[in-house]
Amino acid sequence: MEQNKHKRPVPWNNTVVVCITALLCCFLWGSAFPCIKIGYQIFGIAGDQPAAQIIFAGLRFTLAGILAVLIGSVIYRRLLLPKKESLRPILHLSLLQTTLQYLFFYIGLGQTTGVKSSIIEALSVFVAIFVACLVFRQETLQRNNIVGSVLGFAGVVVLELWGSNESSANVGGWLGIGELCILLSTVAYAFSSVYLRKYSEKELPFVLSGYQFMVGGVTLVLLGMVMTLAVPQSTGMALADMSAQQRFLETMHMMSDGLGSRWGSGMVWYLALVSAVAYSLWGVLLKYNPVSRVAVYGFMTPVFGVVLSAVLLQEADTIDPGMTVLSLALVSVGTLLAQKKSRDR
Image 1: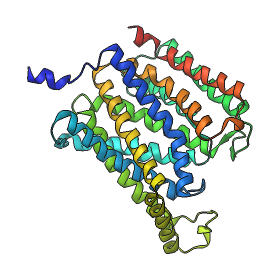
Image 2: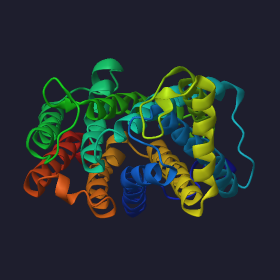
Image 3: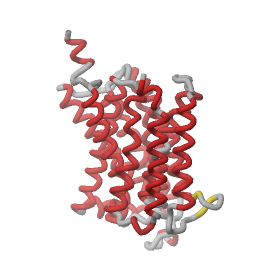
């Protein structure tokens, strides 16, 4: 009796619970796009300061890990500590989910708009399908998966070729460095989502998310510090002309000033809460439901991201409204279609 209670503390497979929880996660993730860019402004982090961007990310996820463990400990009424056999999965997830994904994501977001990032990041749903089907052989690739993925990629192409009213650093004619980094972050996320489903069968999602965030967050902070010492940066602060020691001290001073401000510390706390709550709850949904039943709601993340970015960042004038709506529609329909078979089953 106690064992069943432990396995299902709340009805996580109830349709209403799944819908409300998944939409909450999508809203939180969508809000992260504009909030990260606002955080850059508060901290004075320029788009060409990757070291500071990575340190900013590391602070967020270290705090997110602590919050996830505390929230999970309150829910389960005991201090959540990882099992010995869970240490390797935690390290594995921290490399994919936090270190690699957000290394690319934070650098990419500093080089492109929140609206573009929101829609490109939606490709993670399609990448995850191909990873699960072709790499891990967990599912069979169906026609609707292929058609849905083609529609999703078409949505991103529409956005890139016709949806922007501003120019950016180009690679291959139209794909900028920022967009390329966001794409790479979706690949890291796709692999991490497959492993999260696998590891959640033997460990609580709050334990996996909390400790992998802490490990990944500390890794990002240390990586950012090393980059500050080793990589010259061209910014308005003239860090490129400073010695390695001066760059390090100047960057640490900038981060300290940001954390010391009410808005700066508030933004870091909010972003940490976004990760702690959304990723942990998403992991709980995956633990008690088929992946496709949960993933179908993922199309709402770019919807929230686009709307919030347009409003909070005032990016409406940088995009073509018609092409952006078309792009968003293609991505959303593609996501729904790609998940249709498993959802109907």
